[in-house]
Each structure stands twice: as structure tokens, then as C-alpha cells.
Amino acid sequence: MRVGVITREWPPDVYGGAGVHVEHLVAALRELPGGPEIDVHCFGGARPDATGHAVPPGLSSANGALQAVGIDVEMAAALGGADLVHSHTWYANTGGLLAQLVHGAAHVVTAHSLEPRRPWKADQLGGGYRLSSWVERTAYQTADAVIAVSRGMKADVLDVYPELDPAKVLVVGNGVDAEAYRPIEDPDVVRSMGVDPDRPYALFVGRITRQKGLMHLLAAAEQLPPEAALVLCAGAPDTPAERQAVADAVAELQTRRTGVIWIEEMVPRDKLVPLITGATVFVVPSVYEPLGIVNLEAAACGTAVVASAVGGIPEVVDDGRTGLLVPYDAEDPTGFAAGLAARVSELLADPARAADMGRAGRERVLAEFGWPAIAQQTVQVYERVLAARG
Image (cartoon, rainbow, N blue to C red; front, side, top):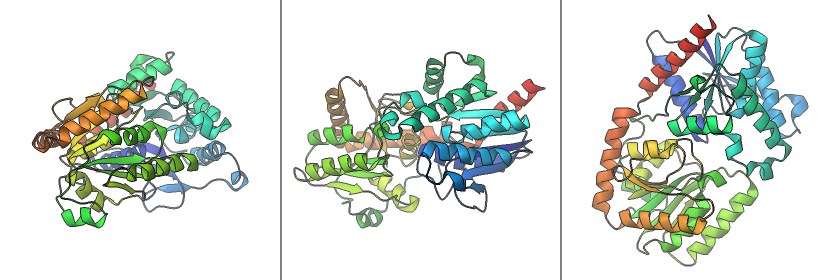
């Protein structure tokens, strides 16, 4: 079986959860005994382990969504020998759709997020959002199978696209590399990033986008214990305006309390893991999250998680055992911020309980979220799709 995996993100250009998912899934697929032959096609320059595709010259000044579709056309042209194409995110969905139409390849889509669940992108992308939404809908409607990364995501897919046959929407969860993400105590590394390892701190890691709920966390920070620090590893903003809003909120917060540290650059894993390990609590205030790999990464590092109870997060964070969940209501942002503050403060005040939750989270990751098992489940989807086609 020859499979073409198509994705916007591929190392070293990985900035979000979908990119992390593709990187580790492909590695696990390639290691399966007797597994499929995998060809990766990605956006950008040449890679040693993938074929990169640049924006076609005639689209160099076009809308970003048109540029993505242009890259997808070139990807589809290169996928003539694939039995099956597996696309990740709307950026790559057109490539899978076209390979299905032109070459007769089977097309599997993994649902990492849904454009209709991110309406704020209409303000950011204008007509590009209308194009991305059309691409996603068309790809989902015509795909041979849709893989949802959680049960919550499957329900979301069927809610947004009720015309889909539920039997073709299959759940294969996200995973985490429990060797790469494991508890590593290294106070010197933590200190090198401007964080006091002897002071309890809450940690956020994520992109600056409305989806991740960072502004809600900054509002909650007003109510955190003054002896605790708040560390934000937040970068890759969706827009300059969103970055500026975070910068203004952080600067204002820093005038009222100490220990508010913003690390804007992408932190390499060898530094990020000790930073996560050293945190008393890891905070995920997302307003929309199909699953949230960062929840798994924090748990794998043995750190308790406080997260919003949205999407697939409740399938990852076992409330009261590996962390604490906070209900989210878009109509009550003040209440959500207060709930975040209360739950984070609860664990900051009881580090022994937080440590117990972190150990339980690590144990659960080892038992349920390994990539080899996820790769095997993915191959079973491939086999099912190809068998159905005869």
C-alpha cells in the first residue's frame, strides 16, 4: 500500500498541534512492521524526508488561501502513484480531493479542527475564510473516510456536516511521544529562561490565537495568588493585532504583580520539557479544542493540567484525577476567567495534590496514548477504505 500524506506543516516548520500529530504519526507508520509505504508532501522548501512544495510563482501576491490551493494543485500532480491520500487540515484538503478526482486515489481526511467553529477567522482572512470553509466542506463530503481525533470531535463533525454518513467518521485519537515528553527536573534550564524554579508557577504553551483562550487566562491572572508566577510561552500570532492585544495585557498585568513572564519565541523541546516539568500546574484555557496535544504533553511530563471543558479535552484530562476542568460559556467570559483562577489557585495552594495528579497523568499517557497503537489504528482505517473500494 502506497500512501501520500499531505500536510502544511512538516519539520522544521511545525507550529501547531496538527503538525505535531502528522510528524509523530508518520514516524510511527514508517516503523510498523509490514506497514504502508509513506510519501510525505508538505508546504515549503525541500526536506530530506518529504517533498516540499512552494507557492506557485503566479500566486506570490495572492490571498493566502489561494496560495494554499495553488500548492495543493502541485501536490495532487505529484501523487499519481498513491493508492490512498491522507490530508491534514483544510490547507491540504484540496490536494487530497484533487488526487481523488484525477488519479482515483482513496482520500482520508483527519479532522483536527473545523472552519465553522472558528468564525473569528472571517475577520482575519476575509474571502480567504470563505474559500477555506468551502474547501473543508467539499473535502469532508467527498472523502472516503474522516478520522476524528476524539469522540467529541466526531460529534462536532457530524453537527457541522450533518449530511455525512456517521459510519465513515471514525475516531482515532491523538498521541504523545512519552519518551520525548517525560519528567525532566532541570532548574538551571528553567532559570535560563528567566523563570524562578523555586517559585510555584502556572504555565501556558500555545499559539496566540483566539482559539487558545490566552486573553481569558490573562484576565484570570488578576485573581491568582500573589506568591505564584505565570509563565506564558506564546507566539506565532494569527495577526499583528492579536499579538499587540496580548502584549498590552501582559504589560498592564506586569505593573500590578511580579512573576509574569512572556516567552515569545518558539522554545526548543530540550528546554520546554524541563519548563513543563517544573510547573506546578499547566493551563489550557482553549475556547475550542478538538483534543489538544499540549494536554498530553503536559501529562507526559508529570504535570497537573487545568483546562477548559471543551471539545475533546475531557477525554484527555480526567477531572479530579489528572487535572481539573473548567466549564466554558462564551456568553460569560468573566465567569470563565474566575473559574480558571479558582482551579489554578486550588492546585497552586496544594502542590502535593498537583504532583499526585501529574503522576496519574503520566501513567495514563503510557497506558492509553502511545503513537504505535495509533499508527496501527490508522492503518486499519486505510485497509477498511481500500477494501470498501474493492
